[in-house]
Image 1 (cartoon, rainbow over the protein chains, first blue to last red):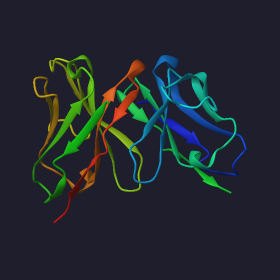
Image 2 (image 1 turned 45 degrees about the vertical axis):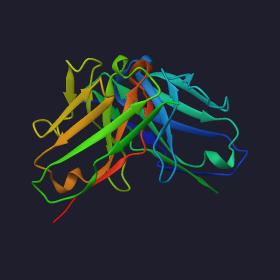
Image 3 (image 1 turned 135 degrees about the horizontal axis):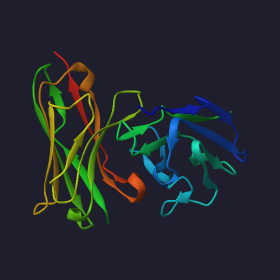
Image 4 (image 1 turned 30 degrees about the horizontal axis):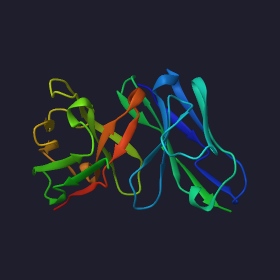
Amino acid sequence: EIVLTQSPGTLSLSPGERATLSCRASQSVSSTYLAWYQQKPGQAPRLLIYGASNRATGIPDRFSGSGSGTDFTLTISRLEPEDFAVYYCQQYGSSPLYSFGQGTKLETK
Amino acid sequence: EVQLVESGGGLVQPGGSLRLSCAASGFTFSNYWMHWVRQAPEKGLVWVSRINGDGSSTNYADSVKGRFTISRDNAKNTLSLQMTSLRAEDTAVYYCVREGLGGSYLTWGQGTLVTVSS
């Protein structure tokens, strides 16, 4: 069974700073099948990145994804006030068929 | 506008049943795999089930296999989840989700809350 582990659990930063979020898989994941989501309180998640590095429609270019194999990264180049939220990585294709990391909470310092 | 609207959530006793529905609009419903994903209060996201475009193929998470049944009506652009033998641990917001490229979740509904409690 593949497990996605996100770190850190909580990241405290200020607007304007750079955020680097990590997602590590217990087994290799195809880059094609790795995605990132943003979730704000009381809202459904929103797709940010698919295929490890492709921004979804309407996502600002300050969001970028990278990585391969077992190590993937979501980077927010310059934090805006609306970026403070919980972020999840997700994989498709390994047992279980779809799975998510436990999330990283990005909070205002 | 692409939209998914869930309904059918509520309070149910342990061992009871509930049927969730999701009304889809703004896209060609039959062209997409559709999923249910749930989120327990203050917890993370968990995949529940998926169904292919014509309804001929389904998959379930181990935790719901044999208890939940996913189905779709392409004529009515509706996705359903029949839940039986409900347990306290099934308490969650249930999201209807449209799959996009590479198994990503392209479009999410607003969610419907299911509470299993006596």
